[in-house]
Image (cartoon, rainbow, N blue to C red; front, side):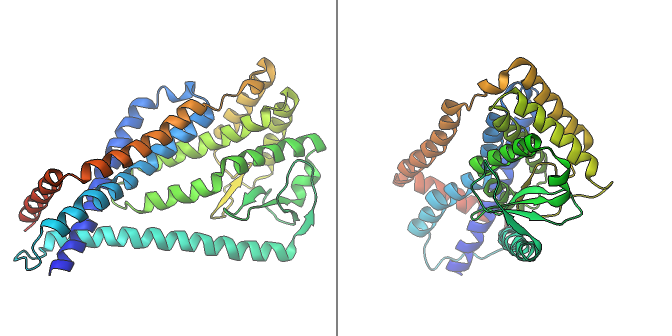
Length: 334
């Protein structure tokens, strides 16, 4: 019973802390959302990623540094406590969430692998200036221009896209995809999907996911527009041409990929085009800020939380207090 009770407590704590932190994160985003349009796209991407990843990270820190040590040190092995139905239910939901997250991550990887293998049979490798990853020309009905994969990324361009875009427009589109590569957006997209699936009962994080995806596209647009105003205008023209080629009601269905245009709503493409025209007209594309100090502060915050948690967790008084809270929680759920 000692081991079973400990496992159930760990799973229940992961679910509870994750849920509460996710609700708090969603509430904070509601307050910050009105100010977000004034931030640079790259800053929005970093803040949204940190907000989305922080709930499961905090849950794992709390469980690994506080709950587990306090349980092992202060819970008697011959404990008379039993796993109640309520505690077992919480542990079951949490366990299913973790299993589903791992399964969906594996399924996304496998689906992407199978799709890549099928595409590579039909595709022809080409060499284009401005891109240093394997690039392929692909006969496909959807106007694809996308970086596919997380570790060994490849760029696929549909033949109809290459035939429709001018050389300058194609170069601008490739510069956009380079923005996704530099930012490792495919890996971040997979991480966001896993974090969302770890918490099945609180869907509020999906709005953060959508906001992150929009900010990631805008950040890649601005990465391309840093070259010059002409690149910004050429990218805007490419967006319009590709958007017109997308069949009505269809979407690009690749698990892990960064698309130039993936079938999002028309107003999303219009907003990106307006922003690119604005960059071209006022020259702000050359002054896109990476907000290195703020991005560094976000990383430092995670490090401080971990270091502070590890330092506090070494205190016997803290662990005794945590164990008392565990005992109280078990009684409440009995």
